[in-house]
Length: 208
Image 1 (cartoon, rainbow, N blue to C red):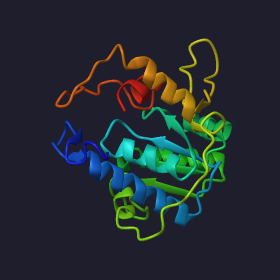
Image 2 (spheres, one colour; image 1 turned 180 degrees about the vertical axis):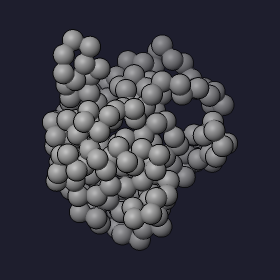
Image 3 (tube, rainbow, N blue to C red; image 1 turned 90 degrees about the horizontal axis):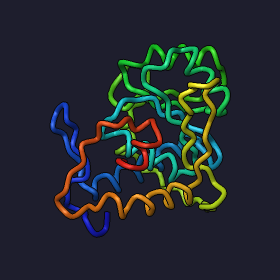
């Protein structure tokens, strides 16, 4: 963000809305502050249940900056599938989008123990991630052990059995990005079409 502040980082293909690197940096820090103020602590698990949007990276980075692990949920998961992932991952926070809110609410009911359901857009009765951007809470200072602390907890597709959580530390994701660098040479002004789903580890690392 420091080197590319005013450069566009993300563009929403559906409406043309964009975020610069500086905006993305500022937004994810405000989200981290708001989540910490709400009670999210290091070691908590936040379920991110959304299709690809420009809010997705901001929420992911904000939650991990606040010390949480993010379990990424298939946006087409049934309430029962979602509930199983919530229970297995130990998630106590959910961020979703209004079109998927009914599924998220039902999954939370089936699981129990969910402290809050947020939305990336707007929905009556739920705090929006957009509201977090005006938070005046202090940014949390969290000690992260890159080798041990889990950043992402995606689930396998379950083709040979029940989907299983894959614990990815901060270091493992950073290592994967370094491994990709020689094969995806990018320069200033280049753009990537993010068709791979962010909830999947391929989209999470190769695109986001």
